Length: 417
Image: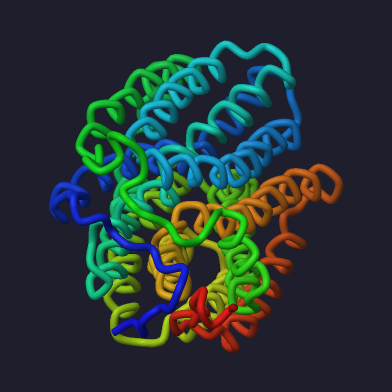
């Protein structure tokens, strides 16, 4: 049970109604399945795009790095808008940007245009259609005793999207060509618009469903002055570095080592499949165990898995085993981290605070994907980036251990006076 929070507490108004948990989970999970499923396959376009356009891997990597950075930065403001006016309009806007960005990628003829479409447009689209916004809806409509589990369900949906969409995207590229595949995905992304209708929270029709006793500035000041929030951000930075480097560069890494493109496709699909179980398990365990210990284990296990993968002889079997293990750990940080934020600070500003934590994740993503391309172009190898990922995993495990995840105690107005 959460400890009671004193003062500045976010309260539901008596007239406000909440959505059913089933409706929230079905619509939220479907949106995350599409949004995350599409973006997890971008690594499959690295070689087709660079070979067709005559660009370097760094050019492609830089565009995806911008995407991750814009996603994280835009997520802060998408969270603010969703907390104030509801998630529906934010998701619809994100879906439209997603379609525009994917189609723009297909017709881009210069690195600048590719960076604008694949980077800025899709980055903003993902900010409005992924975890920060969806988790805000969950936080407002699911009770605290089921919140971590519900977030795990939604994260598992994102993993299922990877399992479903990555092979689909590989099929579309091989069957229709990389440009036509992007256009097809752009049209498919519009399916998120009707799904967003199921997340229209009635209390937001005339403004926020919450009566806040804490302003945005007060919430941010409190969070950034709280050491545990800073440590959560540091750990999430590492998460972004590791997963995006692997998602974007592992297909090319395997091809460079002489393995077929099908092995890379199956590897990414296995990551998605096993992450369904990993994220669900993390959400369930988050209701029973200390979240900081779960996070420390995940980061340390990732470091060990990468080290063993590099030490073992490379073969399709070793790739599939590594993918399955990484899949269990892939997005399992997401429900636990966001549930910890909700547990410490409450849900009044959950989307915004989750957006700031996720921005740290995306700074790590930017560095992971960009360094992968940059160091490969200069050394001809991904080895150095793999070693950095291992060291960061150990560091993230250590910084999560001191986190205090109990609800923060705030002074009332009388006590402050």
